[in-house]
Length: 162
Picture (spheres, rainbow, N blue to C red):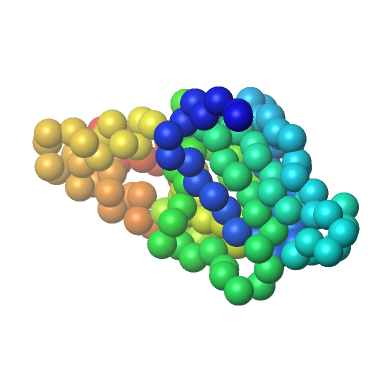
């Protein structure tokens, strides 16, 4: 029996693209691993040899992708926040996850080409919004709401009152 090191983990339902999606995520995130893929046997729910379950890990967090069919779709009700150390990381993940058909949304949110929602957020934005000075925090929030991809320089200017 395999050792379970993460008590709770996301289980993502795809319509036939689980292996493709996991390969894509592993190309965007530098610290990613793809586990042992469970393939459909003859007479399984999908074509024989096609991926059924694809375990993977991003930045130490374990996920499982399932080819479950067309019944369920992703919505913005669940998203993954990528906490970025600086603008270079924001740009990398933003551009990477939008590649080949993703959709930019407001306030640092995007949907990748598989419909999964992500929030690409510089850690400093959370720090500024949590400032005990409500005027500073409010200016940052107003600036953030006007953005699509988050940009640290204008957020910092708003925080400093410039």
